[in-house]
Image 1 (cartoon, rainbow over the protein chains, first blue to last red):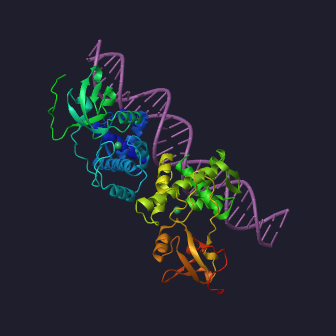
Image 2: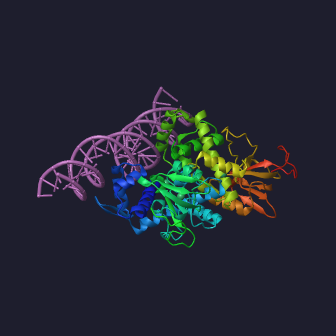
Image 3: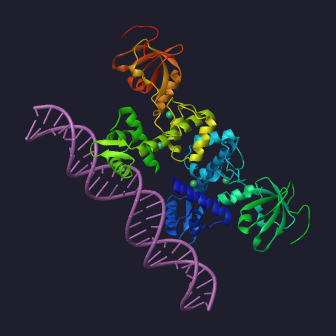
Length: 231
Length: 231
DNA sequence: TATAAGTTTTAGCGTCGTCTAATTCGACAC
DNA sequence: GTGTCGAATTAGACGACGCTAAAACTTATA
Ligand SMILES: [Mn+2]
Ligand SMILES: [Mn+2]
Ligand SMILES: [Mn+2]
Ligand SMILES: [Mn+2]
């Protein structure tokens, strides 16, 4: 297993969760910043090792072995992010790039010790679930994209995509961090979402709002809990 | 700079300190577990980049740039070792292999934060000096190989080679750790050295004794300080 | 159902780091 | 001087990964 192969498996895992299998060559190429021919040849190699199921021209799907490997890398990534934030003073917006490299280069011993010193955390600083030592896919956490919220909803920020530094810095300054409660005050054309957070209001372009996932507030299952204005 | 190139520079640096320049192709090959032709071709590349001075068939020597790079990697290695021991509960005999990989994959930010959280340590868990942020070669620490000590000498363990796990475990169990004071009670033929440490006595084969460096006890400069029996 | 558009794969190439086998070099002994 | 032997380099190959350009396939549309 090279670090390159690990990145492919991780990418396929995440794309499967986002869009469902099968995952296309071009989706992987986009996410990894490689060209499609490069991806095709790596997919052949992964299929040879039976880490993925592949149907030519149709796309790929992780095998059980491949999924386990992907979860292992994801566990490393998220444990490292949590550790950097908790013990080395990184902010949650700085953590991703460091983890993206280190995830491939730590020993199982290191993984164990980091997990122990963190007391086996369930989520990383972006709110993403950390796979357990069993390497089973984490259960659905019940969050949904902010873009699916209606005006008047009060929701808790559950997860924020960790892939874009700038976006993360922006959300950080806006006070939109995992755990915060916000109220949706407007949904404009083209998906721009305006939320009330702490004192002020923040407007998020569709692209940003789509990468923020929210959950209904406390023991509230889906029904808007205060203002009942439609949109 | 690939991680492979970094390992070559680090190896050349250490070999220069141990044997002095020029460093031979085969010495590098031995230390790195590569074949001589492999080393030759990497040396050509390093010479192209002016990281080393090279005279064909004669050997190589680090350039100023190459030495700085080597010290950077060494700083990473030793800071990481110190951090693993101090903050993650590794024993000083477990630390080396983890650091040997991680040294190539941490950011400058990570280096800074680790150094800060350790309060800028001067030595790693094996007693080896950690190069400072200035990346100047550390000054001579006044230690010398245990094999040069005479019977009757009381000395402090200064440094222990970190390259052999088994040897390290053995020394650890024997109580021969950096900072301990020992007395040389015998030097047998073929270099076997017997020292008194704590209660008991420990005999070390020449190969092991050669990798242990000692310093005269407290403000003592070279003159044997108690028993004065020759050998 | 034929064709065009977009996606994917194939072909062919380059770089990096590694190896084995063959050759060349240098130092030392005679 | 010349020969010999060990060390170093050259020659030639290979596996990973990456790319561009060309060909093949799928799918959506006319
Ligand atoms: Mn990665
Ligand atoms: Mn994350
Ligand atoms: Mn290394
Ligand atoms: Mn060390």
